[in-house]
Image (tube, rainbow, N blue to C red; front, side, top):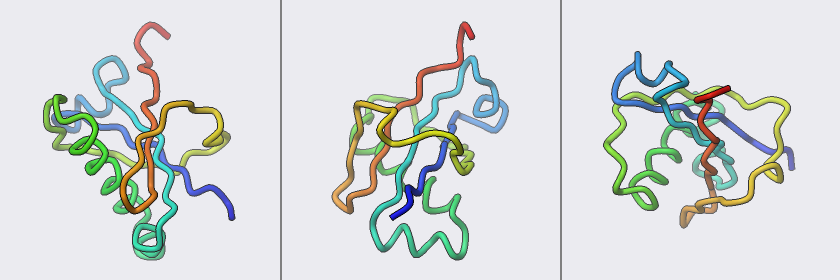
Length: 102
C-alpha cells in the first residue's frame, strides 16, 4: 500500500501557521479506514483530524492550535522519521523539526 503522508503545519492563527519561525509541523500518516475514507472527499480534513488528536493525546501541554494547514507530503518516507505518536486507530504523526535557523 502506498504511504498516505501529509504535512500538517499549525499555529494560533493563519499568520503564525504560515511563519516557519514560529509554527510547528507534523508528518501525518493515514492508515485507518476512517481517515483513508475521508481522502475521497477532502484529504486535508483527515490529516488535520489526526494532527488535532495527536496534539490532544500526546502534546496536551502545547497551546491550543486554532489554525492547521495540510499538504500532501512529497519526496518523504515514513521511515525518514523516528519518533511517531500513534493513535488508537493506527494513524500516526511525527514532529517535523522547526525551520528556525535554516
